[in-house]
Length: 387
Image 1 (cartoon, helix red, strand yellow):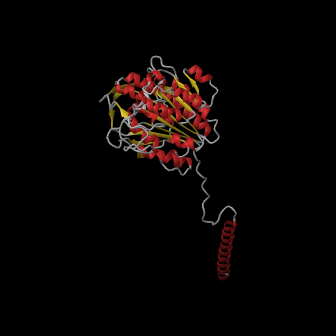
Image 2 (image 1 turned 90 degrees about the vertical axis):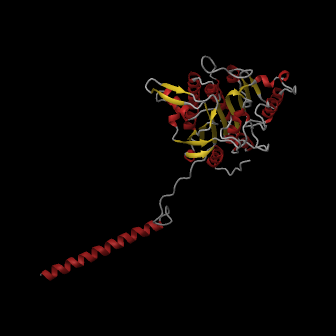
Image 3 (image 1 turned 30 degrees about the horizontal axis):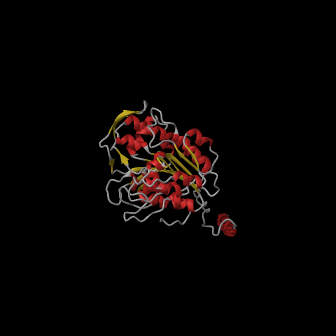
């Protein structure tokens, strides 16, 4: 009797094992034959990464890490800098100096080339280099810039001009009148007037002949229905945002986006908060915080747009740090900073890089300022040679 029971148990074990093996084999065969898998070892295919259709590079002139944190504190935790999912640092030295100026710093960011201080849009030997705005314009994309300085100042000029000295305003304004960007918003009207120029030329006539609507105030800018717009708000430079500069940065950004988004091929836009630098040159903390608050409002407009759009890469950085700012204390709840400046010039420290949108993850870590543009082009999914 015991032998019979044992035999039955052994038979049942082998039968069940054989059945299990057949079931596993059948399931394996089903996986192999599945239309969704080339091999049963294959994982589900990863979705193709999104490509950036639109590019917005934002430069806080003179904006180092201390300036950013001063803004975060002043905003009492509601800073738009905190909305960026990725951040890193940029090394800013120029071709010939440990501490860069805005000409070399701006040229490095927008063209991917180091150059000497005071140069704009050229290498140290004078060879012209191409900015991302020019490259994108030549690809058929819309392009433009918005700044709180003169449109002829070093950073905006580095997007379209080629000169060995950043204050060659007659030459720079001629280059601007011929660059073909769709939107150019800033100050500097005085240098376009023939009576103020050594060459006696009138670049505004060139712009008008090329189909641009020239406006001179926020009201005129808003009313313009042209898709080719130049706005020159003032003769030279604006005053500080406090106590009374018009909201040119925010309104100019809105207008630029309104025009540039009409191009089905996408757009490239450069925005500069120019006077963060000027405030720090003056060692004026109240002036600096007001400019940073203005910058924050612009960031909100841009990030809200990028979130809705889903195909826009936003990169925020600085050409250099100004003032050697140190935050010695403060009150986060009250939004107060205790600021100390260690110089009235530029410093050579690394500056922050913030990124949002397709390809944003590649801007993390420590990079050179000339590394930013190749990453932008990679995010666009385009094989573009840095010229």
